[in-house]
Length: 362
Image: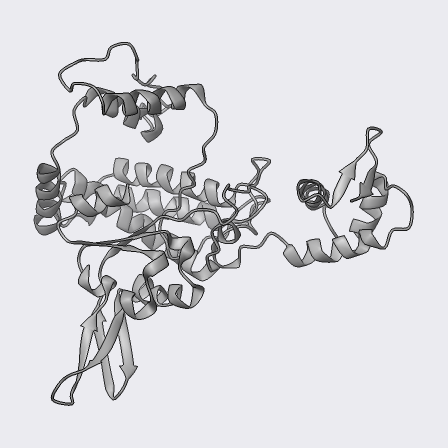
């Protein structure tokens, strides 16, 4: 996916996180033959007004990841060293891919902990999607058919697999993106040429400058205010998310070469943002947890450590669930936190569950 995005963009830089450093991503200073100090641009500066694709993002050291903070927030790189004070533009879109550090994604941990990524850096991405390899008959059938098409003659119509999406209309007569995109993929049998897509994107970026319509602005504002209201399972939302929705709405209008951002563009962006927020803040039980995402994401590691120390002090041969609840009450643990912690300890081999429902230490 990263390679395809890099090859399609008119201006792009593709780097690997395991071989990148702060100076390689931002700027570096070199000594010229005449004694003067020169500035050499890094990947973010070279991809100005383009795309910077970073693969193996989890392999990048945290001190090197910090170099991306200013670029993703201010769209520029500032340097002040060796008597040189300068600011270089880094107006690029960053697409990064990372693997979980344990080999498989653990829904009991936050995105930041799974990817070994700092929370402030993760919160600067407009959209975050988690790709999990789960057994799903419909999805597996679609993936298998697409892979087989790569090895078949493009003139042969493989009608054995029906990928047509079931279009469900909402109360407003709008088709959601979830149902619309599979239909488009099935309708467009052959992929568009890369040169055509590249020229189309370049034309849209150059000549299409959409402005926000009143209807679209009201939809985005209402959604933002709704998310800001205190809710039992709400998620932390800041103005950064509102700015992200505005950027995505304008990009959605540019894709259609429209000079105005319509209400439909805003609704598509809200659906996309909702999917991203759910994947970041959803726990293994499918419940939103506001403590899991953004800059303050945590899975209560300190609380789990204290609880583990407490149960190791237990002197009996086995523990009942009531015993665990009493120990959890000492740390003001909710029922959900207690169940999540017990399940985590069972997965880690700290607690073993007996046939009668009691627990004992490993």
